Image (cartoon, rainbow, N blue to C red):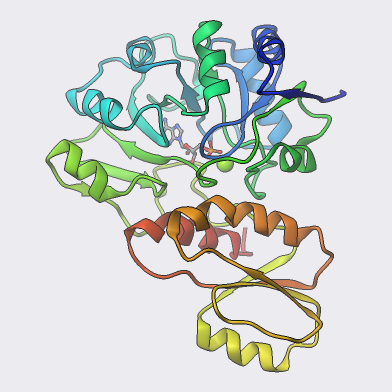
Length: 324
Ligand code: AMP
Ligand code: MG
């Protein structure tokens, strides 16, 4: 299949993307988190194509992207007060709400679960597509299973060219890391995946505690140990470990760090931002760029601690795990 490149700046191209989705095709769309591989969420056959294109196990559920918060009622059995509060505070934005699914929501979308993940994305082109054409799209990140998530149209094509009808190029993603997923189906409110919105921010809006288990969460299929991986081996080290390792390194490596530098010719240095939001925005992009250089390894200086860095730590831990 030839993958068309469409421009999110052109109304005619947004219309073309919507038409392809309505016809049951896959289109990669820009969001404020990462690029999504979108299919009409009401068309189970179209949604099934997502799993084939990505090589994703069919029991890993997909997030449904909605035009606005009123559409939650079409997808959820009931819409709790907590969901309305969080939607009012954070949508459109990088927050996915997990609710009990409405009857009629396809098992293909939810991976057979009785819950459904919902979000209103903030990228203007995608929002306009969803609103104008009355669409809801199921969209995981537009990468082959376990690989780096794409934060620009070019990186979508690196991974999936020929496996989707089109990519709608909307420039670089604002956040660069996937949405925070919060489970609203239990007695307590729990974060299942760290993302741009922190537990403290959610808790402040809800007026109740929001928990964030540190451990790998088996209850979320898709939340696997090895994920977000460059093809080049990635090592994450603290400053002391890095400085020591740099002294003896002779192989060609990339060094993605803050202050730790090296003037060795075999070390390809990339300065990483010290602000957590800026760091999240460029992390996958820089890993993707380093991955094209034919280097032996990518070395990365571990980011600081703190709630706003949890999403980056979560992705890096999985990106540097090589056990499957
Ligand atoms: P991706 O969009 O590729 O980042 O993947 C979507 C993430 O959302 C995966 O980690 C899924 O496990 C999670 N997710 C989506 N829907 C549900 C659901 N109903 N229950 C649990 N996790 C979900
Ligand atoms: Mg993903």
